Amino acid sequence: MAEHKTEGQGRKGRKGRTERRFEAVSASSSWATLAGTVVGALLLGAGIFSQWLSSRPWDLAPWVVGSGAVVLAAVILWGDFGGKAVRVGDAGVALELPGKPLRRLGWYAVESIRVDKGQLRIVGSDTEISLSLSGDAQASAWVVKEARARIPSRVELSKEERQGLPEPSEALGTQLPVEKLQVTGMRCKASGKVITFERDARPCPRCGQVYHCESVPETCLTCEADLAAPKGKSS
Image (cartoon, rainbow, N blue to C red; front, side, top):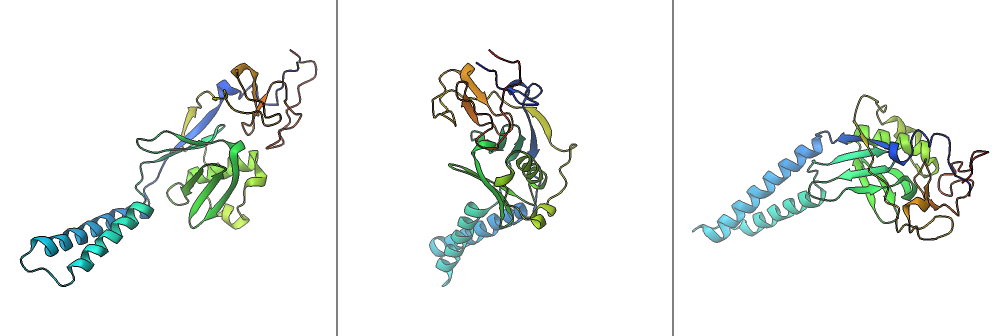
C-alpha cells in the first residue's frame, strides 16, 4: 500500500507539530467587568440591608435589590473575566479556561471564521471559540493567518476586517509542541470507516482531517491539500 505523505510532512509530522500560546491581554472590557461586579454587589447589598435589616427601609429598596441583581446577572453572562489563554497552530485553535479541559477545534472541523460584535468567531459543527479582537488581538491575527493558509474558503473576513488586525509577530506567543493527535475512534473522512488502530490513521498535514490508510484520497476532501504518494514510495 502506498505511503501517503505531502510536502512538509517529514518536517511537521505528528511528532513535530507545534502551536503558539497567547495570554489574554487585559483590556477595557475587563475593567468594565470589575466595575460592574462592584456596582452590582453594592446595590444588592444596600437594597437587602434596607429592605430586611434596617428599622427604616427605603421605599425604593426592592428596586435597588432588583437593579443590583440585574447588573450582576449581566456581568455573569457577558463579563470578561480574563484568565484564558489561546493556542494556535498545527492542531487548530484551542482555548484554555481555568479549571476546565482544553477546548480544541481542529482546522478540519472549522466551518467558518468571521468577525461579529468585536469578536473573532471560530465556528465548528459542535463547538465555537470566540476571541476578543482587543484582548486577543495577536491570537486573532494568527488564527486568520493560519486559517487563510489551510482553509481559506472558510475565512469570511472582509479586506477591511483583516486590515484591522495587527501583523502576526513571530516574537510574540510561546512556542509549544502539540500533544499527540488522538485518532482512535474517529471516522475516515473518505470512507466513514472507524479508525481502530492509530497506525491505520493518515491525518492531512495541512488541516488535520483523518483518513484510514486504505482510503486516502489524492487530495484532502476538506482543504484540498495534495495527499498523493511520492513516486517510488510504497509499503
